[in-house]
Image (tube, rainbow over all chains, first blue to last red; front, top):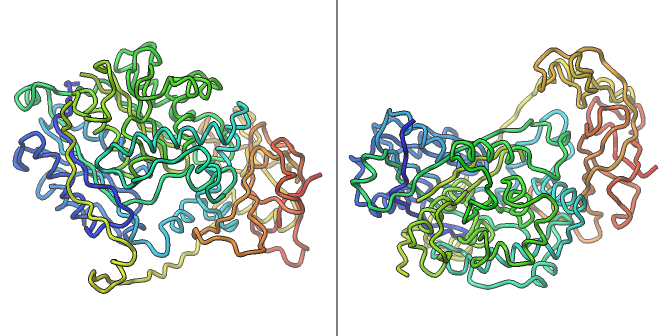
Length: 385
Length: 171
């Protein structure tokens, strides 16, 4: 396997409803990523593309429609799709193209436009449930997250207030992100007093519905060193899908994240992730989920995560900053693009280019993770400088 | 520290702007219809629901009593063995009190919240839960670990569906 570097990154603003079409959002992110490292489309050998459910756009075979916006015209272009896991998974996918020796450069583009679906994109999630044994119960996606959150909190005696601290932390970080769709800080009280959607999930425990795009440029070592003197290396990748019988696994622990993380750490030669990793970008569509994933990522001992959170361990200036980007809670959640945004954040952080959000102490190793499908997939990328 | 974060595009529209006529949009509504065959294992599962029973399958290799029943054990990747009746009682593994309908609309004033739960069914292997609803219980009385029992629809009303159980109520 060849060494693969991230050499450029670009984002659109994340917004509740974008004027741009999915294709235009993809173009903006892709072009910005290319410009950031001085490359042109003709320098790109292949395209790895990710967007989540076709149903959001009401456009079947969305990948084919998106190809022009992704710069994939007449190039080897492949789409991956693992629900919310797509954004980091597309990086894993792009890494394969370059690591294999097949291609020297790969443009990874992820996009989501959730606002087209009427009256609300949430409705389409009914169709991810088993048609024969679950759908007739008319579940909403919030149900299963609420079930997982409740199980997780109950297992360790965590409270809703504990979980709200994550929303406060991430939203505060996100205010400094130029792509963020938020303007206001929130307090623990704001979170606790927000509309109860599906107890224990209240409105501010959840990331928003968003439109947006994100892209990164990958290059093989020899090419990367010509493009930049600050390449950020992909040190390890991992991914895993757990069984679709989600009600038969105990939801308090994300086994799929555990498996994916161990795979990535082994490849990166990391034996003690909690000590060695300097920045974590766990997937945080819900506040509890960031902590749940920190445990699965072996970055926090099970059941002790709230203690560490309250001690400031995960703050920007703590031992292991969590979601310095602001994450999905603080920047926004255009599903596939959100995961890629996390990898872009690590790219900027490890190059010391994150501006106001910069984590102090010259961080060397970061991990990004995304999660999706029927609460069953994790994709993990470890990067280093 | 120099910020090098690159952002372009993502022009935000308010709902008002989107509906003002300055921004054009087209509307479409997709009407998709499907008839799903129930398959080998779930066909029997649903047929037993109609009779008021819950049935599982046993894996010959790991001896898990699997619910919902399946043609094959996904862990051992071998065909399932015998059909096994399990009880219609269980314990609440986790639950939610949900004010949102499937399409993200809110429940109406005065309507009771949805009470989805994962219920570990007695007689199935440990941790083998199914998603269902709770009923005949005040939301604030529900607890993880609570024993519950299925409330079946009258025989004549059953259709061979997971909803032949109306909900699970506290035992």
